[in-house]
Length: 458
Image (tube, helix red, strand yellow):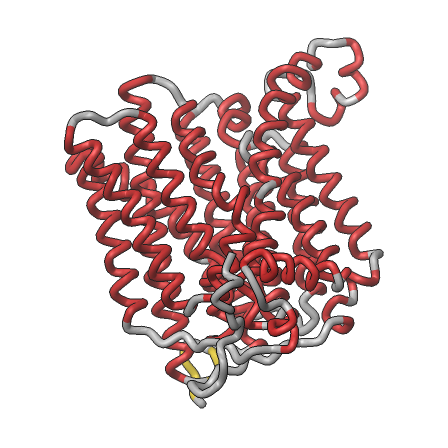
């Protein structure tokens, strides 16, 4: 045993986790830079934002439609191979995009196709990467490990725009895409050198063996038989829905309130700093032993700060509110990942994580689709109506007040939903009600976790 970066356990496993996390973070930064560079180029050429939003849609579409099925592959294959395939497949989609630009024949459908290809391989890689942490980090340290993994997202949010803004005038969109491909290359090379243990078969895994659909349905049966996990999935899906659409209003809302792009940029920088600070805090602290005692108070804080965000107008208070909204989110993400890593069989976690991600993340595009038209066509026009007098003391009657009401309502619903969730024993006592599954490496002489008969692969 040893101690690497605070993780008590095998030194090689801790180093593997840190190497894997770092390479995936660099790859994420590269992908964000490409997305921004292409956004710069498309907006300069067309003046439209719709292609940028459609690209994000096609990137998420495979995970939404078939993410649960892709998780079967993450369990059948060596998890290291699934991670490598994910990076290589995303690199292939990016390479096709580069060739399109270099040929001078770029069309928007090329971008959508590349995003779709990348989304397919992301759907395979993400559950495999989450399941790999189970085999690399002891349960007592997983909150911290998942928080370190969460650091990649706010870091990419801070670094990618700066790097893309500096490099785009120098190397254009094709140069940034080449850098992105290089980050995928380093990820593949590093993971090739790592050892990610394969889990020993469990009774639950054996009972779900069979054909492709049997294995997928086995993961659904497992979740259905554990109401505590279903409650957790439903609660996180609800909060994800209530957060994503309203937070997407941040740029137009702050622009209306402040009227200064520089002020908006500073406030949004503080917002990203909140997520970064939350991930760092969780990485150092590690959370409570009973994970729900970290999750539920954290979401109460997020909801309360969302209420404040809808009520205040001064830039300093807006910055404080947004910092407070983002601060607890990496903590909740880390706790949710750690909970499923502990409470589900390691040899089924590819499928379990894929289903969980599919159900939770489908709420984000739904929230986007509802929030925009609701604000534009209903809430903002109501500001001039006679009935607005009932809410005017809270949010005012100036431009942007409709968005303020949406933010206020979302925060109140998060607080109410969290209090209601805390009243459900199956969720509140999840840590005690469900057993932990030990992460034990499969030895070479043991059979595969999911045996596949020659005639049952379909």
